[in-house]
Length: 299
Image 1: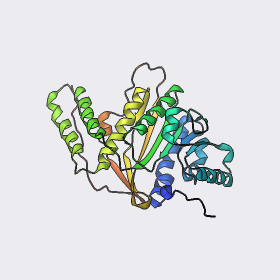
Image 2: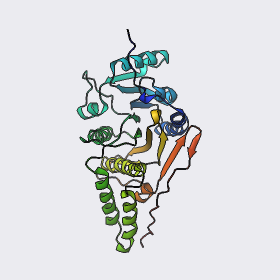
Image 3: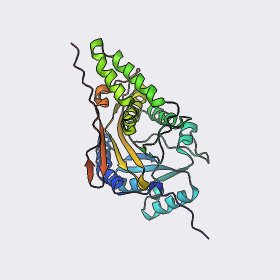
């Protein structure tokens, strides 16, 4: 009898290990201290649960999602070996489907709300049906219902199915948003220049995806009354040669606010965040330098 085939897409490597043990762990430690209690975790850790095990000192109960029956079984075995089985709440099915429908394949539901959300995809953000952006919006909405601040970690492939040119539309919308907040029309050309730079087909897609994802998270978070603080995206070589991109974002709920929140991190600061590249021993210089948007303060 053959052993069940395991998905090796989520096997770790030295670059991912660095992010998990050094970069993410330090941020999670600070977030746990800020909230003043252990974090409830919701995520896609794969059956080895390397993230959960590495961060378990900061985590109370954790909800995982697995779409392969044999890997879900291995996850329970791993949890037993690591002595965390009593803290495990496992859902079965596709993440996007569970978020959009509220239940997994067997009718079980997530245990809202969560203090730490960690989504590690082997795939991109945009597909033809836009199910992933819709699922992330639903997640943010669910957190807002409970007025729960949370740390949001997303890792995905740089490859996207941008068949409907969503990123191009996003860049145009971004340019309009910036101009609407600048009364001095003489300052509009710098906005046009940076939008044109990101639209250029010769610019690496990691630059566009960095800006696209951070703006998406900020925009939807503010609409749900969160003060959103983004960090520079991190790219790194994943397992099998696929390049991955990693985002870590703070969502702080603002209670008693009946209107859209304006984040403390300005849109200008978000655009100028840039991009980091991680290797096994730390960060290395990225291969391109993005232009910085500089607009003098209006009097």
